[in-house]
Length: 347
Image (cartoon, rainbow, N blue to C red; front, side, top):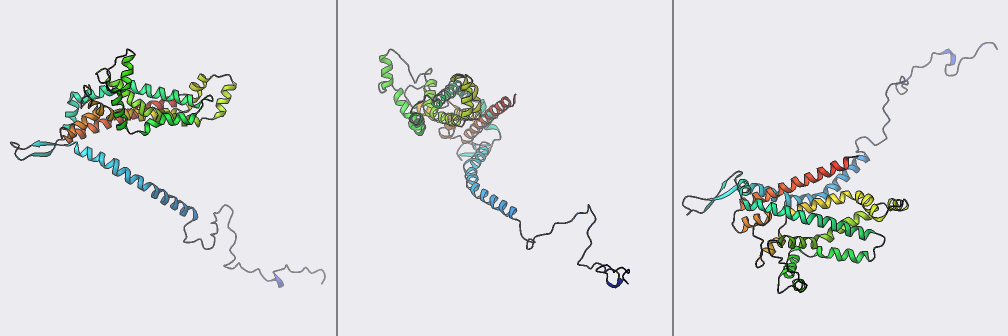
């Protein structure tokens, strides 16, 4: 009959609908979590990110391994041995016929070093040395670097090489050269000073400290100039051009823009200079060999440790003195770093 409705497609003959098979799972309710489908073949294999990280770590470890091995052999092992050696001393047994015996002394070597007036006076000498050397070194290096960085400077490469060249000469050779220039009847410098009516004894008690400061300045000034000049070259030139347009002069640009922007280099040079001052050894040792020199074998703490080890054969005392010098250097470095960090943190 034309009025009879047809059954819906998929349900021919009025059959009930088929139940969903196991392959046709019903859709999950909204809000339920659904695991993302894994790509074929991805099961059981490490991801590309993990493998790249592993390769990066392996490459970094391979490159850093020689450094850490050398650092351990050249730094950690000697420091540990010095600490161990400083706890022992040699004493004669009985009437002295059996020779010296190495016995545990605890902190006895440290007490002996601190109780020795010569060791304590060495730090006062270093204090006077730093009072002369650090301002002259820092101020001179900054001024020369600023002059090289100005637009009016000419022949920059020549002056950089001329200033850095003394640093390439070993400290021992530099000290020997200056000993010759300080010696009367040999030095043309002393002869010229005497001809001009200037009499100055570089080996006297008053002239020893300026003589050693002069040797250190000649050797290290150019090195610090190169560090400051490299830092100044990294300053954004647009800032300098803007300051020039605003009417700032060279002095204002140097002290208000350039120096604040290279503060990290200034702190680094200050730390290195302090640590190097505490290790003062070569210049005074060579100067002490001169005739009539006021420099003694215990003039600086490093010379005291050297004398204890190689002149008195007291290796425990020498190790204790070396450890105390290292502690003083660490404390000063920490104090300088803490002070500069607080200054940078201030608004």
